[in-house]
Amino acid sequence: MRAVDIIAAKRDGKELSREEIEFLIRGYLDGTVPDYQVAAWTMAVFFRGMNAAETAALTDVMLRSGRVIDLSPIPGPFVDKHSTGGVGDKTSLILAPLAAALGIRDPMMSGRALGHTGGTLDKLESIPGYRTALSVEEFRAILVKDGFAMTGQTREVVPADRLLYALRDVCSTVESIPLITASILAKKVAEGAEALVFDVKYGCGAFMKEAEQAKDLARSLVTTGQAMGKKIIALLTNMDEPLGNMVGNFLEVEESLDCLEGAGLPGTPGPGDLMEVSLELGARMAVLGGKAGDAAEGRVLCEDCIAGGKPRDLFLRNVKSQGGDPEKLLELRGRWRSPICGEIRVPPDPAGSAGYIQRIDAWQVGHAAVSLGVGRNRTEDQVSPTAGIRFHKKRGDPVKAGEPVMTLWSATEKGLAAALSRLEGAVTYGPAPPAPRTLILTEIQSEGSPEAAGPVPEGVR
Ligand code: URA
Image 1 (cartoon, rainbow, N blue to C red):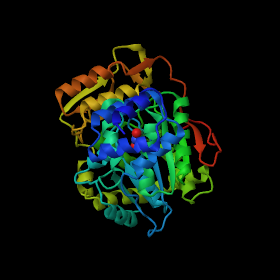
Image 2 (image 1 turned 90 degrees about the horizontal axis):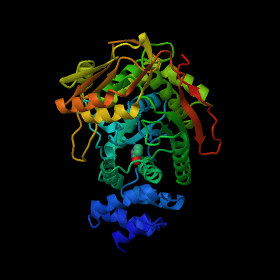
Image 3 (image 1 turned 120 degrees about the vertical axis):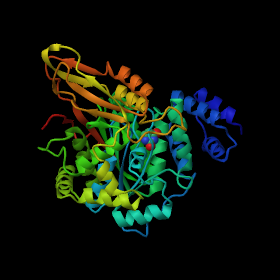
Image 4 (image 1 turned 90 degrees about the vertical axis):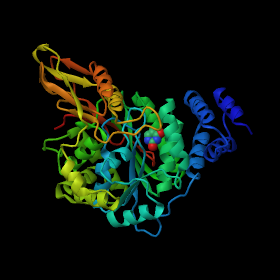
């Protein structure tokens, strides 16, 4: 077998056998297939796609590239959630301690920043000392102690995703349904979760721009995951606008902590959109973990649990368990920022004396954040913990000429200039408030009751 023939077969739209997929992935891992051939193959998959059998084979080959974590000695239930990637999407940092506080164990294996989207591991590692490269033994011990543990792909567990994920990031082959399906499910099956909630994003800031594409991705995740024995609920959530008011690694840790202290809960000031999505996802985790009979009951449980403060305490406890310094985190909160600072302000007189923000383009914000140092342009790039963006105004807010809309913090002058020029056209203004946005479009479940949730419009409170 030769890698070049496998690439050509996919380039020409042919179906690959499991043996061919295995030859390529195993060869990549042992160094007999170079990364430029794997990069070419991912591009062929990007254009030609994969059928269900190929997707299942790729997922299984990636899963078996390392150890599958055995959680059987630990009492469950084990439920995890994973997002397909967004801008300002920090729900994992809220949901893992929330699930743990509800009595659900969350064995969470996440990724780094990918393309213009943020990565849970990069966010967590912005906490001084926090380690995400856990051995399997450490992962299990922390899961028992805190009720959740947060790790990344390692040389031991899903090493194939560790390499492919970073390669796709810099080769522009992230936006592929079979590659995303295999990447996510290989991690989720390896970590040992019994049931999974997927936050499948659609919109300009997501990898799937259209809702129909996102539904295809959700179906691919549900069908492939179900065949691997997992119970799954996928929510389709909107990613046209950044989620919450902060984009950036440490900034997003701070905002998650705010939410764990109740910010954005119904009737409470704070990032309502972020909390809305987190609560709806948390409600499904509660259902899958057997803590609630339906999503409505699960949602009440989640709201009450956050208000009670236990998830916040568990988050700080986990910071310590994973090598971080909770005292330092609290001390740096609200003031640890990159030194080079800029602003986007409402341009002179956009709509008479006042107007409303119609839209903040999440795709542009995500790319601006990469320029600031939040993500990577090359695999070897180091991300900045303290770079990022804070929104003072969001979609639907009334604004006056000259008011600040965003503050930017950058690792470099060049990065700030690039981000400012990108963000100039990212905000749209208009004379009247925009129509409410639907935050949660639909729900797809493994048992086959699609579209059970119905839309949840933003601005319901
Ligand atoms: N999240 C993942 O883990 N993998 C992808 O390919 C995209 C999002």
